[in-house]
Structures are given as C-alpha cells and as structure tokens.
Length: 183
Image 1 (cartoon, rainbow, N blue to C red):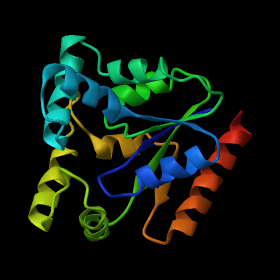
Image 2 (image 1 turned 45 degrees about the vertical axis):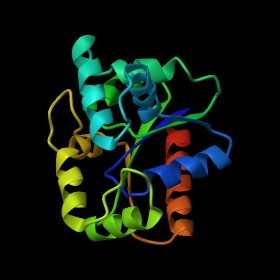
Image 3 (image 1 turned 90 degrees about the vertical axis):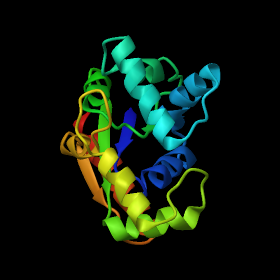
C-alpha cells in the first residue's frame, strides 16, 4: 500500500508520515528530490527555490507527474508513505498504482501558523503575513505549480487535524483501516 499525504504548510502531514514510518512504512518525501536538484545546481534549498525547481522539472519533462514517477522508483517496501504531494498531476500518477491512496490533512490557518512558528525550521515564516503569503502561493492552482486545495479535493480521506497528536494518530489509523477494506 502506498499512502500519499497532502495538505497545507503546518497541517500535520509530516507528523502523520512519521507515525506511519513508526508503523513500518517506508518513508519518502517529495522535497528530497527537489533538494537533490538544488544541490546539483548549487541553489540554496529554500521553500521558494524548491517550488521553482519543481515547476522547472515538470516543464522540462512536460510531465506534471514526473516527481511521483521518480519517487515511486525509490519504493522498496510493501507499504510506503510519501509526504508532501502538492500537485494533482502527482496524485494522478500515484493513483495508477493499484494500492495507492491519498490522505489530505487540513487544519485552521492560525493553528498551522502557530505550529510552523513553533517548530523553528530553517526557511519557515516567522510572521503571520509571511505565513499567509506562502499559504497563498501553495494554493495558486497552476498545473505545474503547487495546488494544495485541488489536491485535497482528490484525497481519498480527509483528516481535520486541530486536536492532539493522539487524535491525529487515531484518524490515520482510521484511514488505513478504510483503505485496507477496499483491497
């Protein structure tokens, strides 16, 4: 089974991915492919630069699902979780696989900002206006860029993550149980 996670910045998709990793899923991240490309090009791997690289790669290969193809090449386990799908073309490519499902993780914007500002990651916004700018960029809906809202509409299961970690884990387990019944 392949589980792809999508959702806006700070929604908890990374925490959901780490939980699945704890449960034995192979853990893969879309941005790792972009970080590799940034390193090869000598570009600082900021969130904005990674977004530009992703668009450039999709344009270069004329394929909005290119990153999914690259990520699927790295799957070596029976169960895998891929964190950070941000484009409908990537979802369509994943869904060509028999046991691939998408979980969307959503949370209110103010709560997501609180989470992001608390994690102190390099490149994360530190003010609410800067956070809103990133949030808007990631939802602009261009077919080669990031289109989080459109990805959420293509999710097989939506988790509303405004509670505690235990609640998130319980909801992830519910999603996996629902997918297992389908196979």
